[in-house]
Length: 246
Image (cartoon, rainbow, N blue to C red; front, top):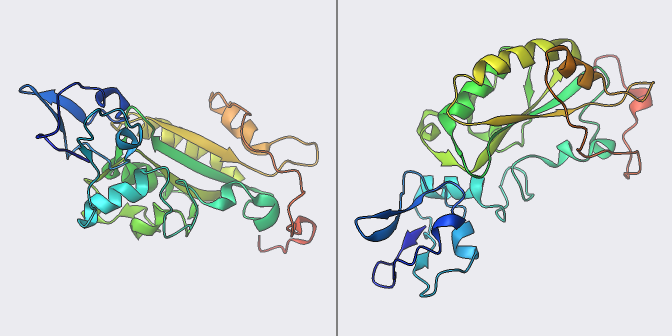
């Protein structure tokens, strides 16, 4: 995002609409910090500038386009073909069968409005997760910029890029979830942003969430306010006849 200084009347209406505080007053002018701007276009869509001084970038620069793809809530990522930062599988398990008995689906969401995140912090979290048997979701946007999915290493060219938020998404055997949570507690002290953990699993025969028990073991407070699939999807994944290799 840029501001046409010839049109700008320095009213500052746009400043509170930037979710990462990239719009600032400097030397009597209102300017956009290009280092901090994530190209989400939220300030422009708010339509609060009385002189139309806000100008979205043309995004011909590869790295500005990269920020836009990860940050604009109305942008469809090429890897997923859906709006948002994660994959459809996080919401449609009845159809895809991505999260099977004995496994948990994990989404570590870094950033969020008000903070944002740099990809060097995304890498720290991804590499910590890769210390376990994490199977990173192939179509997740973060996975597509990994140099090595065995280690969680992000390509060096993107490490200093910033985004509104990013999700590290993978499946993990249930018996490793407790240790993963302990590791993520350690990583939380090393990153410059905040993150939350999405926890997904198929209910057991008693109708309970086994992954929830693992979170409680390490003192994490879990909020069961997510999405619940009840088997009405078509076609429904045949969980009753899963082969042993799963």
